[in-house]
Each structure stands twice: as structure tokens, then as C-alpha cells.
Image 1: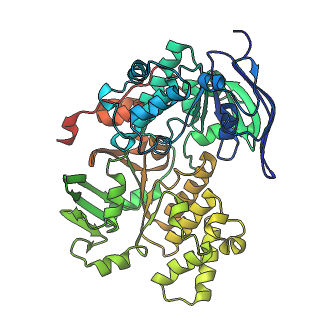
Image 2: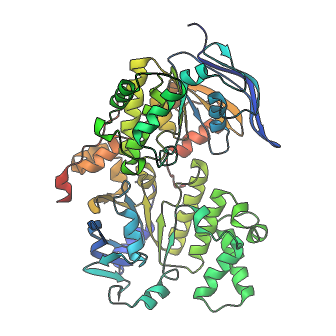
Image 3: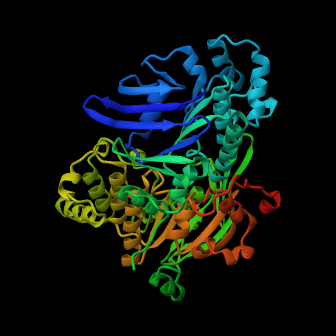
Length: 250
Length: 295
């Protein structure tokens, strides 16, 4: 395929009279990992929700895999684009087993061979087969996030939208989940958009990133620019300084 | 290293604020005893002491045990628990209650859940003052306004009459700090005080805490899961795992490459699994845990 996997042109989102995303244009190539960083209220999660089709009150242009997207997405779209949410404690149904969670997308899309696919998805994220009939409360936070990733992968999508996938996890578990996401992308040539407030995580996972503030894209840069502490805008610099920890004056 | 720390040097000469020896927190459950803290010892002077660890390491339970805030199925045991010469272990609950808030107080993680939603923030601060001091309502209000100013809230008179849902996260956390500090405690326990805040706001809140510790000579116990933050903010750090202290070290040594050989493997493991802007790596190290650490 030629052209970007994900592109938006002058994307705007308003809730009542609150204009949360303003004229946002971005473009992500197939196989690329693109980061969006910003503070709470910057609109970063809203952008992701629009791309995933979870928010229909937007204007502008959204094209995914070369196809301009309507507000109501079709089944083929959801098969190609999947999302992983921040809080694995909230995103899994407490009364459904891992097996139920992984079988549901297959049922919706009328895909057979569920047995083998579920087994494969679990193996891909490093969950032992014995976990298949467990409930979320019988799993640790890291294991739950693996289930959430397996649920997204079971449809074999080409794009994963990741909304703060590790911010609810301990650092040692974060490392495991990030390693998993890195190797999955390499194996399957996936395209990622990763939203995070943690600059180090974004620099680790992404080749390019966009800094957002008050609904606007402030600066787009490469991970190298970030690591070299060389952003052009004041806000991006400020964010970088703040992420380095506390400094006493004098 | 990079910061002068006058409170630390004076802490050496005077009586410690808090001495803790072999602290244990147990929960008796139907399936057995859960040992949340297993034999933690430290002394606190007029300094910033960090406690870091992952979830379940017992760091929050340590803070709660000091304040006598462990609910009944839990029990708190220690060989020694002394606040400025007063034995906390033999003290009755009423006296502990008097100490709490007045001499030792705690800032919780999330202002959204810690403030009373149906009371204005100002009246909550004033209430905290009147619980511990004989004062008229008017005097308490004046004090509260002064305190709001001390935590750098720009229009104290306006904010005083706001309800918790009307203030931002950063402002709510400042209100909490104002409420905890109005009684002028000697020890402040801050349990993840900035984890719910954006990075830029986080730094403002830390700055306020830091100024107050320095100017009032308070002892601060700073509980956090964020190694970078603790390293840059605290004087000393206790690294906890599974209810035990793996090691206690000067905060500056956490980042010190030349001190690596002296570090506990768990501390190194925690540092190693963080993505680092300056040292990009293809694969993050994962933590190997050794059961022998808990033996």
C-alpha cells in the first residue's frame, strides 16, 4: 500500500461550546509508531477516540488505510483498527472470562476457528493457556493488560491505537508490556499511535511524536530531537524540563 | 549533590523526630496472615525521606501505621515506635488521635477522593485548624486564607468559597497540603502527593512542599513509585520490596553510575526497566526477583 496508514486533515472536535481539538493534521506511515504527548485536557485521547470511531462529533477529514472515513465506521474498519485502553482494571468485563473477552470480537465479525485463534492470541502476548478461563480479578494488572492487547490482536488488525497503555502499571510491568508491544510491531508490521504523558516511554516506543496543548498540535518532532533536548517551541521545552524531575533553585 | 540541605545537618545533632524499629503490619485473613510490612526500621530527622517501591511493597502501609490508620483486621507491631521521645506503642488511641493531624499529618494521593465534596474547601481548612487550636471562626478563616496564600493560590478569598469539584487537580492538592500544614505538624507524610497531577503542576506542588520543609524544618516522608522524582526531590531514600527495606541510600547515589556496585540488585532492576531519554535501548530490562531478598 502506498500513502499514509492514518491521516487527518483539519480535524476539529467540540463538546458543547468546548473546543477540544483544533485544526489537527497528522499523517502516520504504515509500520510507523507515532506518539502523541501532552498534559491532561490537551485533547490527545480525544484524537485517538475519533480515529477509533468512538467519537462521532468531529469535523474535518480522517483517512485510514487510504480510505476516507465516515462518522459511522464499517466492520472492515474495526477489523483493521483496534484500541488498547489505559486502565486494564476498567476495560475488561469483571464477569467475563479471558476466553469470553477474546471470543467476542470473533463472534461479532463472524470469524470461525475461534479455538485456535484465541490460543494463538494468548500465546502471542505470553499468557499461559491455563489462564484462559480466569476472570479479570484473578489476574494481576500486567496480565490484564496482556489480555486487553490479546483482545485487540485476535482480529489481526494492522493498526493499534494505544491510550496510555502502561500508565496504570508498575515500572517493572511497564517494561514487560512495552517489550511485548515492540516485538509484536516488528513481527506483524503493525502501525501504532501511542498516547502518553511520559516522554521517555514515547521516545522509547516511537519514531516521531506530536506535542499537543489546548487541543492544538504544538510541535511535531522525531524521537532523536526529543532525546537531544532540541525542541523548537517553548511549550515542548517546558514539558521536557518538567519531565526531568525536581530541581531546586540556586 | 546539586542542592544544599541545611535541615539534614541539624538533624544529626538533635533528637530524631521519629524512630521506628522492626515495624510489622499484618492482616489476618481467612486464608492466612498477609504480611504487608515485615520488619522496617528507620529514623527520621528534619529531612526529606523518600520511600519507593512498586504496588504491594508496603510503602503506603508504613505511612498509615505511623498514623495509626490501619483498620481492624490489620495489626501493627513494632519493637520501638517513638515520636520525639513519646512512645507511640504504649499510647492510647485518644492520645494517638490528638497527635494525628496536629503533629503528624498526611497528604493523600488524590484530592478528588480526599476532600469532602459537599463542603467548601476553605471551610475544610478552617475546620482542620479549629480541631487542633482554640480559635474563633473568624481567626480560623484568616489563618486559612493565609495558608492558601502560602501554597500559592492566587485568589485565596475566591478559592476559599469554592467546592472541591470547582477546583483543578493541582489546586485541590494544594488545598490538601494547606489543610495538613495549617496545624503546623512536625512530620508530614505525603503518599504519592503528585501522581494524579500533570508534570508541570507536579513541580509546582513539590516546590511548595520543599519550601515548607526547609522554612519550617519539618520532617517529610515522601512515598512514591517514581524513582526519578524521589531521586531529584529527597535527601535519603528507602527502597522497599515485599514489605522489607532492600536498602537505604542517599538520593543522589541513585543516579550515580560509580556507586552502582554498592546498589541492591532490586534497586538496579527498578532503574534498569525505566525507559531513558539519554540511553535508548532496543529492549527494556525486566526485573528478576530473588526470593532470597525476602528471607
